[in-house]
Image (cartoon, rainbow, N blue to C red; front, top):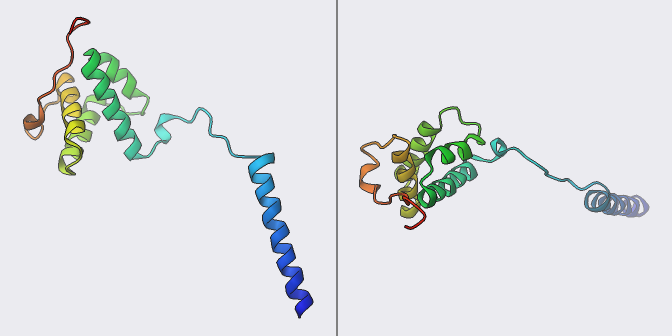
Length: 128
C-alpha cells in the first residue's frame, strides 16, 4: 500500500511539472489580434468612455463613430446613449458620465435623463 501511495504521488508531481513546462515554455497561449468584439461588456464600456474623452478633445463625432464601430455595434449613437444611461443608472463616475453624455449629445442622442450631466462640450479648434 505504501508503494502504491508513493508511486501515485510521484506520478502526480511528474504530471504537474510536465504540464507546467509545456504550458509555460513549449506551447504558451498567445492572444494576438483579438477582435474588440471579444471584450467583455465592462471593457467595451470603458473603451466607449475613452472614445468619448477623445471626442471632447477633437470634436470629431464621425471619428468617434468610426472608433466605436470596431465594437461590432450596428447603431453607434443608440449604443452610446445606452451606455450613458447605464452609467447614470448605476451611479458610475460623474466625469465618465459627463463624457458619455457629451458624445451622445454630439451624436444627437441627448435624452431627458442625460440633460443634468450635459456640462462638457468638445473643443472647437486647435487654438482652444
